[in-house]
Length: 184
Image 1 (cartoon, helix red, strand yellow):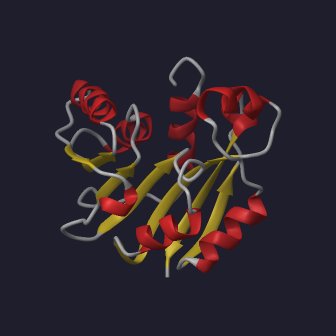
Image 2: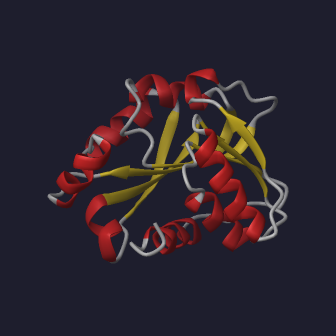
Image 3: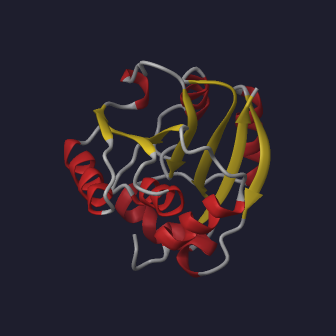
């Protein structure tokens, strides 16, 4: 992820939006390698209150190790979206390249809305149509979404789109788009 520019892309996206409070609770949904949460810690420091969630124990271990190298103390939860029951609301949800893999994106985003209170933010990164994604599809069998599709699903599931983010360079500029949404 780092060599392809995704880590820097996530830093740029997170830095472009409104600042979080140091006490905010954050969940990286489908954290994978932890690149998005690592970018969050790059901005907010090791004291950030981050929960990593992923169905894969291997990915959780990898992500937790990456954040611990930054001095972070993170909570980990091995679960998919449908099986996770947070103990309290989150202030921010990070979700990079996950919605493309769930069977029902609308149901997933509606469930995420239940994890937060009004005003919470969703930092969403989604694959967009581009020929580069055909190469990625060979490995991951993911979907790509037009901006209008993502906007409609967010609106239908209790989120208000605040802004979109065009990644400025490298593979992320061709494969991905960022969406910042607020829970309503």
